[in-house]
Amino acid sequence: MVTSVSEGPKADGGEVGNVSLLGSLPRSGAAPGGTARLRVEGSPGGVVYLRDGLVVAATTPASPGPESLLLRSGRVSEDAWNAAYGAGAPTGRVGAELVARAAVGSAGLEAVCLLAISDAVFALALSGGSAGPPEPLGPGELLPHLLLEPGVPPERLRGETERRLRIAAGWQEAGITARCRPVAVRPAVESPIRADALRQSVLARANGRRTPRDIAFLLGQGLFVVMQELDHLARRGLVEVDPATAPPRDDAPTLDEGVPRLPLLPRHGAPAADRPHDPEAHPQEHQRES
Amino acid sequence: MAHNPILTELRALREQVTGVMESAVATVDGLLVTADTDGGRPEVVAALAAATLGLGKRTGTEVGMGDLREVVIRCRGGYIVVYAVGRMGLLAVLADEGLDVARLHVESRPTVERLDKLLTQGSAN
Image 1: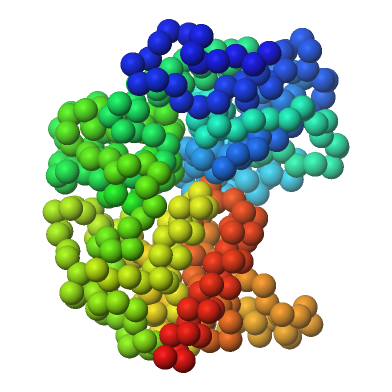
Image 2 (image 1 turned 120 degrees about the vertical axis):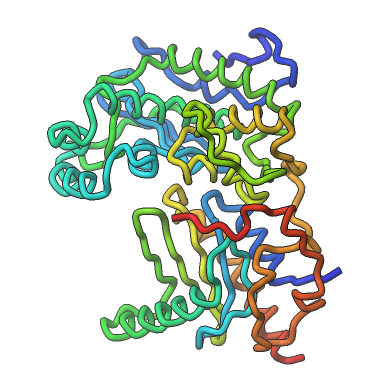
C-alpha cells in the first residue's frame, strides 16, 4: 500500500518527500525470513536491510550512519573503534566488541543505530526514493558493521518517517530543504547554555556551501536534527538560504579568492582579485574543519 | 563578471555527487589551476595529488596492472580521489565518509573529459 503524507495532519509548508518508499517496506509478518535488502533508487539512493521482518540497518550517502555518528561526535574514540573493528569486523561483531570494550553502552549503541536507521529512511523518503521488492541476501554477502538488535518493525519506522516528513514540510516555509545551502548571517558565538551548543555548532558550519547533510556529517549528528536546528536559525534570521535547486552562479565569489593563482594556463575571465569579495557574506569561509 | 568554466565543472560535480566537499584541478607536476575549496590549502592538495597520481601510475606499471584509473585514499574522515585529466592535468576530489565512491567514478568521467578539453583549449590559446 502506498501511503501519502497528505493523509496526515496538514503541515503549513505543503508536502515533501515520497512515501512510496515506505509503502515498499514489507509488514513484519509478511516479510521473508532470513536477511534481505531493499534497494532504494534515487539521488542519492540507499539500501534498507531486514532480518526476519525487522529493519536492522539502512545506509545512504544522504545521512550519517552509526559509525559516523559515534566517531564524528566523539562518543567513541578512534582507538576504541579501531580495536573493536579489528576484533569484530570479520565475524560481524563490531557492535558487540564496542560494548565489550566499554566504548559505548548497549543501550547507547541501540539508540544510535535506531537514530541512524530513522534518519536514513527519512533522508531517502525526502529525496523521493522508491524501492523494489526485498531481495534475500546470500550467506557470503556483507551486512553493514553496526546492526540494530533485534531491529525495528517496519510499521513503526513508517509511522516515524511520516511524522518527520510532516514536520519537514513545515520547514520549507523557511527555505530549509535537503538541498539548501544555508549561510550564517553573523558568526556563531560561544554559548554558555549547553542546550544551545548544537544550534551554535550548526550555525558555525553554515557557510553557504554545505547542505544540511554535509553539516550533519561534520558534526556527527542526525540529518533530521540538523534540519530542525536550521529551521530555528532561519526563522530567527540567523541563517539565510539560497534557492535550493539553483545551480551555482559562475560569477559568484568563490572561497579560494585569497589563493594566489599561478599563470600556468590561460585564464578565462577576470583575475580573482577583481572579483567582489565580502567577508561578511561568508563568515566561516576560512574556518578549517578538523 | 568572470566566467571560469573549470570552476563551473567543479561546482557541478559537487552538486551531482553527494559527499563531495572540495576539488581542485592541477597540472601533473602539481601546480594549481583552479580549486573549489572550503578553507583548505588547494595549492598543497594540488602538489600532493600530483605526487599521489605519479606514485599510483608507477605502482600500477610495476605490478603489470595496466593504465591507472584513479587513486582512492580512504581516511577516517573521508576520501581523497585523484583522477588523471588527459596527459597534462589531474582532478583531486575531497569527500566525506558518506561518499558513494562508485557514483563518483561514474559521474566524474564526463567531468574529466570536459576538463581535459578545457585544459587543452586553454594551453593552445
